[in-house]
Image 1 (tube, rainbow, N blue to C red):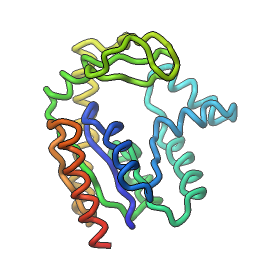
Image 2 (tube, rainbow, N blue to C red):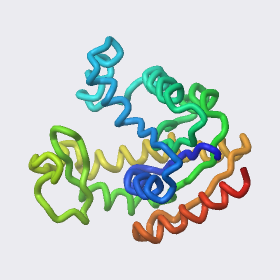
Image 3 (tube, rainbow, N blue to C red):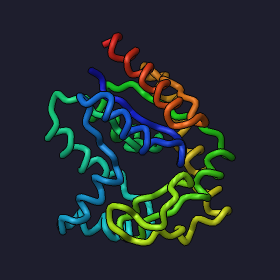
Image 4 (tube, helix red, strand yellow):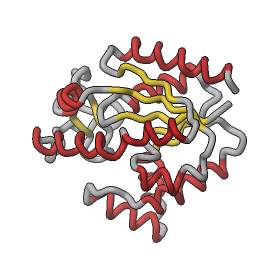
Length: 212
């Protein structure tokens, strides 16, 4: 089976759909960039300390750090189909990282800027773990940690729009690049409800499995 690259602008539902994909297709393992970087940050290595400082400053982690944790993950999961969530986010990262994972199909969660802004403006986070909760979550605390959820200090309308614009500018051109490189692109309407979106994804994955 081919690897899968899950991509979309912020708040298009990548995390939610990644979990549903793993439940329905247990043959896949998940590489979630943020989680792998946070795991490395806890190890106390030189690179881990560098990553920790960058994360705490709310800055973008260097591509060389992403490549390093990706190489370790791939080595520890040989001959295993991998679902990549948010691993390649720009043309520059694609040039550096695609040589490591050359064979993959793309699940593109397509969402409008305005819909993404509306969703993102309603999220809350656990201040200790950075786990986020959308508008559909009705509690005030993270059920896993008991920590009180808060609105991220920089989740202002202006900052949210800037982050969405960055995501559109850097991420969406990858679709054209990947298509020119011969990758199969499955475009999913991410504005629908979670289950409707997943049924589209499920159909696309089954289609990809037939073409291997």
